[in-house]
Image 1: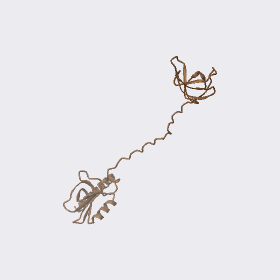
Image 2 (image 1 turned 90 degrees about the vertical axis):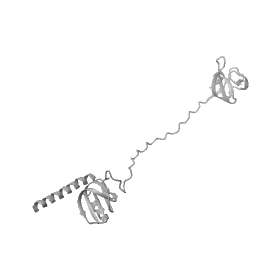
Image 3 (image 1 turned 60 degrees about the horizontal axis):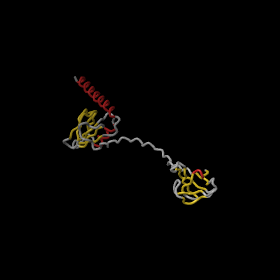
Image 4 (image 1 turned 180 degrees about the vertical axis):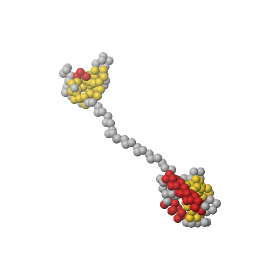
Length: 203
């Protein structure tokens, strides 16, 4: 009978360790422990030993098979958990830690801040040189009146005479327009400013 009981105890210990290893693999990616002051854990207890709270926490942090711990200050007792199913507010002074957040219980005191998704870098915008407005076309002309008389400069196409220009005078055309008879006139500036009969200019 004693042999049978011993075998059962050994089998139970192996089962607890197997459960603890399996659960630990699920949380092995977690670093550190979430701390819950004044909390008592429920789950599969893998070990129970008299240790301080700091020693209890250090043991759990260093062992891959430990999923959580709780420590009773009044009894100076440390419990190492192979799996944690829940937690509750302790009636006596206790502290607990878990590798995973405990569902349905309050947040730990070292709850990580919400991670803000990294924003993609703003696309670089190539800076183009400013567009220069096209330079106005300048048409330079020479007065060449075939009548061998000074060319009249008027205030509009076939308008009133303002002054005259001699043959060979240099002017620049800024605009072309027509009079009431459809004849072309050029608005010029240079040696004089006004309207000149277009056919009297050689450009």
